Length: 456
Image 1 (cartoon, rainbow, N blue to C red):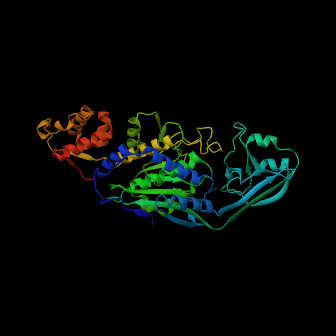
Image 2: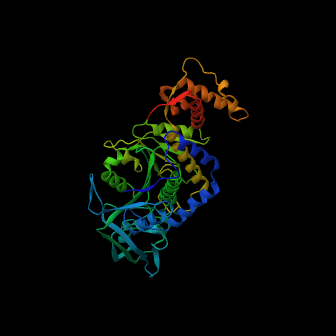
Image 3: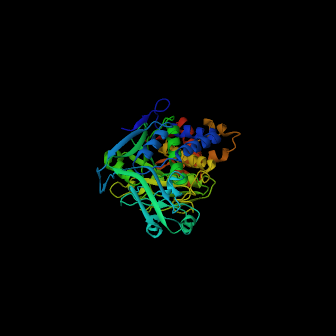
């Protein structure tokens, strides 16, 4: 059962949470929030994580101090659709000693130096025997790559190509002090209960070792979102998942097929701390409400962005969007995976992630939630010709406002298109107005009995 928070006060349908999010965005202490996310990333950075094991559990305990988590352990050997939960991997140390006896590669200096999921090994090898077990990036010679061997037993080390080229001929002593044993796979979740059982899914992978943007930025943002949403009064329930990549989402879906049917919208979080523009990858459906909501938010952000169609390659959205589930789940990142030179290398360190980028990403996610929470369909209760707004004090309410014309136009558009068929988001898109202006207009008109919100 997911750890649940109920937020502040009674749950309210409609746009109550959307208004709360709008106020929160206006009052957001960006410096404090950015520093809090960086502090969490900094604490998690040194830990050697993988798709199973002690490092993953330790990381989830730390995240659990930010937001309470319900942790699930799934035994090794458990069948999850066409996959099997692998044996648990743990590592205590690993090194390579050169011909002179000095340690030339050391897991203690960087956990990226070990091929993740390396099986245990101890022995002596000549340089030419050792080289097939050494992984480098000739095109980025100063960086140490991140490599894995999850589903094929092997051992190895990762080094910069400069270091590889500098190794001297001779005999090398090698130790990989690891274990591959029956254990379990660990994942965690936090549920914010809303007014309805319909859910918004927010999912991040938490299985990479010392990689800040592709891993920890998503973990920090997801934890922050869970804490923020837990203090709201949402219409939707929100499920925040912290999973090892691929096998984690497959395992969760295999264990929660009925629960997954409640997911109405979802986002996969990764790579949200770099300097690049926001990038949205649409759901498999391509025209789901989440797709329109994100594209609307990005279009009114005033910042550069890009939108891409769904592809069955990437992060865990490809599991949520597999044809047997076809959930409305997209992925909102900054620079996509594999498209920045530091991706899956030692260059993805603490200096690569910027507080300002984390905070901007947080804003975009909250703005998407604002749209989803506030969206709905209304019916004009005075549809024959334009109702007189002045006598109802609606024009007077605009006096002196810097966005008076925008609000006036929003009212006119809402009245014209509130025919029971157009959602507020569709009206905002048609009017080329920000969603919050259209929602606020609808609230004002509803208060004067000119609109009625339709069920659903």
